[in-house]
Amino acid sequence: MPDEDAYETVDLRIEERVAWLTLNRPDKLNALTPTTMTELRDIFTRVDDDEDVCVVVLRGAGERAFCAGMDLAWSEKLTPRERVEQGRLGEKTFAMMERTSVPVIAAVHGYAVGGGLELALAADFIVASDNAKMGLVEITLSARPPYRPKMTEDGDPDQPEFGGSAPGWGGVKRLPERIGKARAKELLFTGARIDADRALRLGLVNDVYPADEFDKRVGELAERIAAMNRYNLRLVKELVTYGYDWIEPHPS
Image (cartoon, rainbow, N blue to C red; front, side, top):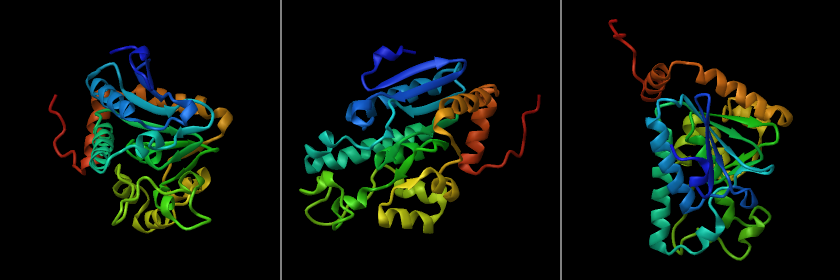
């Protein structure tokens, strides 16, 4: 397993059977780039095969954000063909994370919007700091004022000349699975950012921790899961994810 210096946009630290995976572009609110996608794919391939890892914790560096989604500098320069391919790249990357053998926890603080929330939704579950703000905000990028954000006042780089656009990295599939279709439609139709308390009520997050206790509480959760047998964690994840029954336990 390479050390954290091997990656440009993420840090990886493995300690006591926990893989701490940190998006590390705090000056850009940990926005996602093609390099990040490549590095995440490499990390999840390696972690999946590492018998010393029992749980992965995904988080963001800095005070302000877990992840602000797709980096605008990447989005603005895409050709129509590249725009199609970036959608496929994100979905393939997040699907790889979703299929990781061991549990993956998204530990969300600050902003988790757009592709950032889609990334968190690919984890097995999300825990949040009480300062978290979450939403699939893509629809607002071409909305009328006052709902259109300042960053797209001169036009939405992701809006095609004809037709529409929607969250493209799995959010339209995973959000309804997490909170139900009606609630997902409300959030998707409005592009609203919601706070941690409402996210908890909707079932988007499993728990909310005070900001000043967040790292400690996440660490305790990861430590508990990491104490479990790796093979059993893998087995339970497969059974729940794919809806199997454990009909014939091992004969030993």
